Image (tube, rainbow, N blue to C red):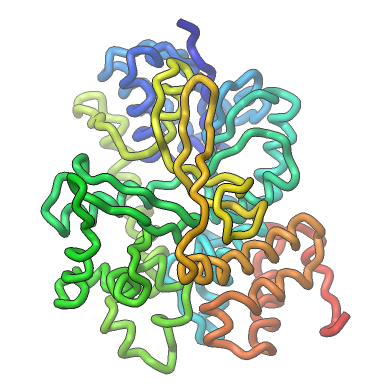
Length: 442
């Protein structure tokens, strides 16, 4: 059996790379894969190289492992490209996305998917992804690009509009949330049958059953009786209001809607357990513990832990290589997949994968209240993508104006001033065309 060539872009994300490598190399058919590890940070890259070889030894696998800071070398002839980059890093980019809006009284939790933080992350990320795609068009035109980079929907939508490379966006919110709900109900997740659809981080379980029994009445009972865990109160509240459970975590979801994070209603933060500035706290904690973790990962005297993750990447590669059919959830272009969401936008739907590749399945129409809520997020995605495709700065303002959370907290003048401040603060991380300011009304 042939061995696939798999490029890891952003392999300096050592722990995530370790999980994906463990998944891939655990399959006998993939244990001889040609693994190319790429990162712009040679120190982090060296750590991942060490970890990759330890994982391979632990699994009895014999992959070809190469490391490089040369993107063309990593991409040349690759069958699969796994992308996990973060453009601008935690510092300065993510810190800027939090600290500048905070001066306007606009608070966030994660800021990587929607909102003003998601818009800015798209502006600095999509151009880099597109540049990579141009390299793929030359060096591996038949590759499958497996994107784990946020903001997922904006990235995938923009790439579909500008590159012919086959791309799918992968997330773990569907499978993670299914596991959380199974735990709340005391049912093994493997016994639950579900169907999910929507947009990334705002998909909903249209069906959630156990041995033919609809589990929604039991979930609604948890919500009505106030038994939802504090960290998950936002989603259980939305279940009460909409009748369906959303896939993304409560801390994420709270900043996609105008209902929960309000400077003038601080009691809501306590009531719904919303962790403001959650992502910076996580990053600071990871930075503080990195050297200790790195030493442990590189220590040959310590047993390296290899266990299967819930990520879809290895399942897709294995099914395409062996023909074993599976269903995964992927973020793809809406080509008549969901009737009441815009054609061409990025949707998250079940996808059949086998030797014929990734095949998204048609869902049809969503409950109207769900489609309407998703549309409020799609508006922001669409205008951000339009800004990226056309280079028009005015569409950045328009995207921010329509963002549910931003528009519920700030006036129009404040929104425009905030966009100006963020574009200036991000400097070289944002494409030059977005630094050309036009007066209001032009």
